[in-house]
Length: 372
Image: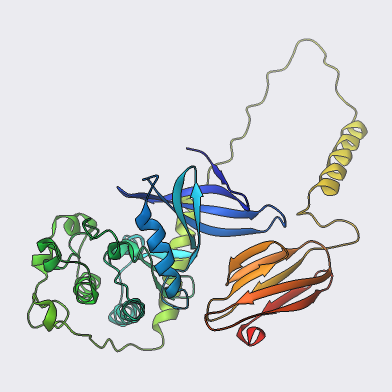
C-alpha cells in the first residue's frame, strides 16, 4: 500500500488504517497543502470500485448535511489512484466499540449518547437521508464528550446492497425494504439495550435483531409504522464524564502503541587504533547541519519572521478560499509571512470576501460573526 496519495492541490500522508469493509477502506491521514504547507488531520474513505457513481451521488447529497453538529462533516471529494474517495473531518476521540472494551457506561451517559444520536438521525431525515448502518463502530465521541455519527448516507443510493450490521438491522430490511428513519430508530433501540446491558463483543456478533424485538418499546416494535421517537432525559454531567473516559482510552492506546527505543549494543573494543574526530570538529559539523535545516525548512521559525495562524471556528459550515487554500471550517491555516491576505467565504445562504491583516506570530480566531 502506498503511504501517500497525491492530487493537484493536496498531498495525503497515510498514518493508519482505521477500518475496512467490502466496499471501502478508511485511513487516517495528514492533508498537506502544496502551496502553504498547511497540515490538517483528515479521514479518507477510499472506495474499492474504480467507477462508483453511487459515491459521487453520496458526496453531493451529504454536502447538504454539513451544517449539522451531530454528523461528521464531509470536506471534499477526490479521486485517489483512479478510485473515488471521500475526505472526512477527523474527530479526535474513539468509537463506542473501542470504548466498550475498556469501560461501562452509566445510565446518565447512555441517555445522553442516545439523545445525541436521535438528534443526528433527525438532522439526516431533514436532509432527506437515512443512516442505514447505525452501529457501535459508526458512533464517535470526542475528547469534549460530544457525540457524532459517521458512515451515513450510503444506503440511500446503493438500493440493492445490504449495509446494516447485525444485530442492529431492522427486521424489514431482511425483506428487501429500503433504509429509512424508522429502520434507524430500531437500530437506536438495539444500541440503547446494548449500552445498558452486559454484552461482550463475541455475544453481539452471534445475536440477531429478533433478539431485541419488543412491542412494548416504541423503538423496537416489529412494525415500522408503530415506531416513534423517544425521550432520553440526562443531566449536564454526562459530557464531562464521557470526556474523561475518552481521554483515558486515548492515553492507554498511546502507551501501548509506543514503540520501545532500541539501544544499540556497545561495539567490541578494537585491537587497532582508529582515528577519531576531535570534539570541536564534531560540534562544527553539527552546527553546519542545524544551520542548513533552519535555513531550508519552512516549518522552523528562524530569523526575522515567525509563523502566524488563522483559526476558523464556526458553528455552521463555511467554505473558505484563501490564497490558493480551499477547505471547510473548522480549520487551521498557517501563515509563514505576515501581510495582507484575501479571504473568500461561502455559507449556505450567503457569500462574501474580506481582507485580513496578519501580524508576525499572531493567532487570529474567526467565528460566526466574522462571516455575516
